[in-house]
Amino acid sequence: MLNSTISYSSNNLDLSMHPVSFKNKTRKSENEHLSMFYIGNMETSNQHLLDSFNDNIQVDNYTEALDYIKNIHLYNKISPDVLIIDMPLNIAELTAFCSYLNQEKLLFKTPIIFNEKRLNPLQILSLREMKLVDDVVDIDSATINFNRKILFLKKIIWEQEKKLTRKNLKSDNKRIQSPVNLKRILDIVLSSVAIFLFLPVFLLVALAIRLESKGPVFYAAQRAGRGFKIFKFYKFRSMIVDADKKIDSLSHLNQYNSTASGPLFIKIDNDPRVTKVGKFLRNTSLDELPQLVNVLKGDMSLVGNRPLPIYEAVTLTTDNFVDRFAGPAGITGLWQVKKRGKAEMTVEERVNLDIDYSKRYNTFFDLKILAMTPIALFQKSDV
Image 1 (cartoon, rainbow, N blue to C red):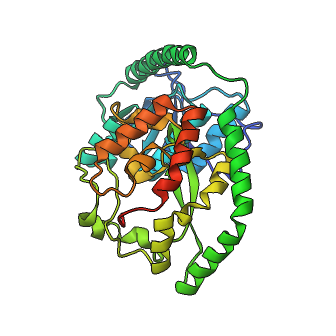
Image 2 (image 1 turned 180 degrees about the vertical axis):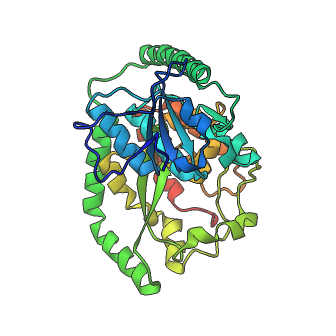
C-alpha cells in the first residue's frame, strides 16, 4: 500500500471519530484542494494519479465503497471531488452500485470515472452508451489535468440536473397527482387477498417441484425495475438447477431477433432447461405467484413493465429506450395482454409497448389490463 493513501475496511470505520479524507502531502498547485475516492488496488496506479490529489480514500470493492459513502452522508462530511473505479469490469455489480447511488441520491454531484486500461474496446463503447459513469479515461496518463477534467464533468452534471428538474416540473404539471396513491393501495389489498386465497396452491406447487427434481422450490434473481432499481425477484423454479449458466449455449434458439448493438431480450423456443412441472407452471403462469410477495413489499406493482435481468436491462439504457424504466415494474402489463405467447413479437414491439405503458399508466388503465390478463394466461405456444 502506498504511503500517501489511507486504506479502509468496513469492519473498523467510524466517521464520527475520523475525517472522510486524509491529507496526501502539503504542496501548492491547482490540484491542492482536490479529493479522490478510489475503488480498486491503489498499487496498480502510478505516482501522477496520487500527485494530482491532496486527499485520498481507497477501498477494495463496491461493498466497502457503499459502506463508506453512506457514512459520508450520515455524518454530513464533504463529498469527494471524484470517484475513480480502477478494477476489472463486472457490469452487473457496476450497474447495481450506480443505480443504488442514484436511487438514494448519494454522491449525485460527484463525477465517476472508470479506468480505461481495465476495459477492452467493446466495454468502453458499452460504458459510454449506458452512461453508468461520467467518463472513461486512462487515469495513469501524465497528460491528464484532473482539476480541469473534474470541473468540466461537474459542470455537465450540473447542467443535466437543471434539465432534469425542468422536465420533472413539466411532468408534475401535466399529471394530476391524487393525495392518495390508489395504485399502491390496490396493490397491497389485492396481493394480500391473493396470497391468502392461493396459499393451498403455493403448497401444491412447491410439493410438485420437489417431487420432480432436486433443488430449491423458489427461483430468486436480481432484476431491474422502475428507475433501474435493483431488487430480488421471486418465482417458482421452472427450470433445472443452474439453468442460467447454460444460456450462452442456447442463444441460437432465442425467440427475439436481437442485434449486437441493439436491445437484448432472451426467450428460448421450447427451452430444454424447463422441467415437466415447470412447463405446466409457465403455461398457466403459476410460476409467477411468488411475485405477489414482491408486490406486497413494494418492489413491484400488479400491473407494470416486466422487471428485467441485469444483462437485458443494460441494453435499454440509451436515450431511445430509457423511458421504458419510467413505469413501475409489474407482474402483468401491456405487452403481456397484447403479445404474450406470440412468437412473431419483435424486440421493438415489446419495448414500444413498455414505453407506451410508462407514459399512459393510471389506476383505470391498470384495471383494464388486469381484466384482460386472465385471457392471456394460457399461452398458445411454448415461448
